[in-house]
Image (spheres, rainbow, N blue to C red):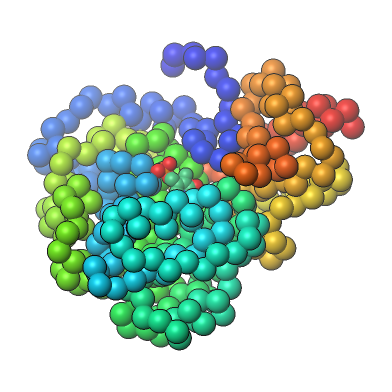
Length: 361
Ligand SMILES: *Cc1c(COP(=O)(O)O)cnc(C)c1O
């Protein structure tokens, strides 16, 4: 493989991709109207359903996750109705903005960064007003908070007309998510975070209820029209040219993920999280996210030692690790350690001992 001065990515996306996955992208190109492509699509479909724990369908989108945010908002929210967005960090905030920019009416339940949303908050809002959709981020990457999706799902499922839309971009496969069992209507993810693929392809598990809803929405746009995506999907195809090389990579990555086993994968991430927490607390750092809701895939460390995060990142670069310095308004006050995707304990331990060297402990 070519060498671009390999820095091992410890940032929360894009994450490190294993060489064999990068390699899988170098297959000879195939035409996407060929039977070889249909076979690839069908294989992927079976594995994606297992990964999302759904029996419905999983769209493959030649976009990043942001595209599917737009798709979910456009297809699921009718013009004269509203969506309820649960906002508590940079990503959940942006999704709410995207719904508005697509002309949708939006109410927001906002919590402070670092806090989780509770099912009670959602229950209160749904008692007061009718919503076409509740939009929630499973794992808020900017803060390291994991929202209680199963409990929120139990509340939303009591309302027949309300769809549950979940962004699991940085949670998917790193922490438990059961699409069908938890009553999730859209579960969307990007490739380059917890899925540990290169960027450029996104996936969404979509329920039958969503397709019924989409029929009632006039302006669904074209690129992310779920009705069109579904028509093509039934023929093992996509409406426009798909990211074939990335689909080769996904095919291989899903084999490895399913061989590891979903529950084992969740457990591995939980262990990585515990290692990171123990390290942070024993070095007199704090943990930014509310206790009980701390992410399996990314830990946001409260910079209680007042280290210079730029110096830290520079030091770690010397060890070929690319580090995060905190997101947006909490940059520097916090920094994040991503332990998602195919991260292994041995590599994380190398990261933490590098940080110890920087701290001089
Ligand atoms: C990164 C991220 C997104 C945006 O995904 P892109 O693939 O960059 O478009 C959305 N939601 C969450 C939680 C993220 O971490």
